Image (cartoon, rainbow, N blue to C red; front, side, top):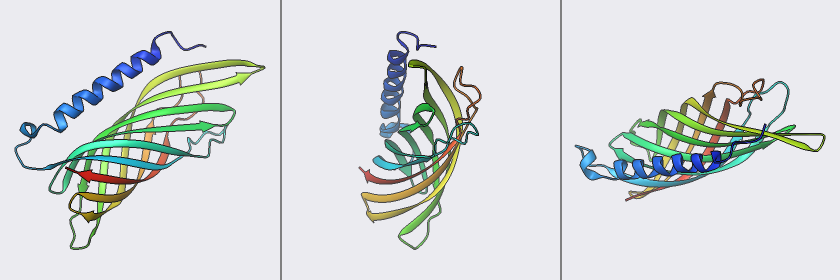
Length: 193
């Protein structure tokens, strides 16, 4: 099945609208009663899975960016990451994560955290059969728990590693037998304004 005309334009419109809304909301000082720090983040990592008995997707590299707002030991964040797996089926995912982190403040410069959020996952699956390409796309909602460590190099610069499990209902439209849940690990650098 071919992708419907305009579906890419609709996905771009949704992503741009969401990003503008979150930028205005998260970076507006009047939105918070307590003083905090907005931040921007860049990340690189890997995606492991999806776990599919019919295909071995294995591990892929990913890249992403994030922004958010931190007050004391709580952090509200938005991350956008891109994953692309290739086996008998090519599977691509733009994952938009919105959630929070809780930092366990310690006297050490390495700070552990737990996080939980929801994701909007823009999946695109493609299969080539006898020289004919069959593709489909779908937007899925997922739950994403995670954990990690952050090391503050200075009051404005931090390094972190995080591990997440993306729990997503299986299948992409006509590829319903495939699984779409996966794990990820990423390293990130954050700049606090």
